[in-house]
Length: 464
Image (cartoon, rainbow, N blue to C red; front, side):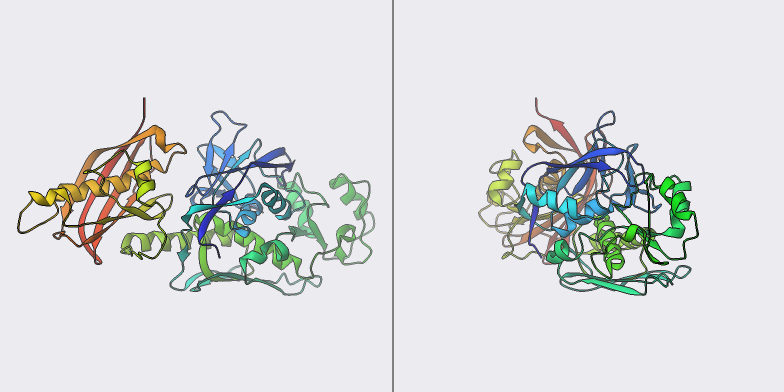
């Protein structure tokens, strides 16, 4: 699995009809900066609103995963997200001029081919993996669904499906190496049973459904005249099935277990909504979108819990997200007020920075000579600069903005900081940014012990 984050080299587009809405749309993948993540943008709506690919934005699970934010809705995101995860692309802006990505052939392969044609570019920032450290389990006893995550220094998935059907026996599919997604999983198409087809149409779903973009499994004997009715329903001159039970229009399967492989594809796409690449063994029995999303929410809660309780660690051998020169490019501070030496971790809501305290600091000349102690106000300044880098990461052109500290609450200094100490600062957003104002919780640690903490309010102001 990749160490560094990746994006694409240039914009690339695909066009087609949406599976459920039936609306034609063009979807354009664009490069995005490090720590951007996956974001959709409805360019056909006023203000061109952006929708974060976040499990908290899921609003509908009717035969697909639909997200919504700021009044903008994106239907059926799972196949698109699966392609990005499968190629280990971390950052992309996905523009749509309609409400739903094109269904293409019902799989992710057309998206994968487009992204590969655009070229993949490595970025300087490290991937911010979440390593599952304890058993995470979801169960729906009514539908006999179970999904579990186990600790593993890799990302592997195994899926089992069982529809109590004489046509489809119990099927299993596994992906033991994410680099095999393109060859083993990406081309596996969505499917439904014949008995579901009419019901889906009556629910105002699969308006863009077609026998070329979905597998329809004939799980019962087709009565006389029914094929003509299905042809009218699907707006086809003719549909056929040679066997009493089989695949409508005798569509050839790519794999005998294509249905299980497609369920694995869906699971990868839905788990992308967690917002971070995973290291875990995922085991799923009879998964579906509702269960996938419920499970993703459990993992995200685990991430949030760990973030609140975990003391960040520092490995000097690990390449930083930003070294001292990159920090200098982001912040306007200079000696003697540039307080941060490097940024070692950052995602969309948190950042970890390093301050190496040495006897050469100019403030030790006058602050308790003979008993050098780092002034609390400068500990706070270093924390604010760390938070300022996080605030700047919310815009695509940070060089055009100033991050200002405009409020401090509940500030505490717990332990003296002295020459030779390395302070690890962690700052995280505690509320969404509104009109350029955001709240953060900041903490500083030395040797695993909390030395300072504060709640900060920052303002992002555009340079004149």
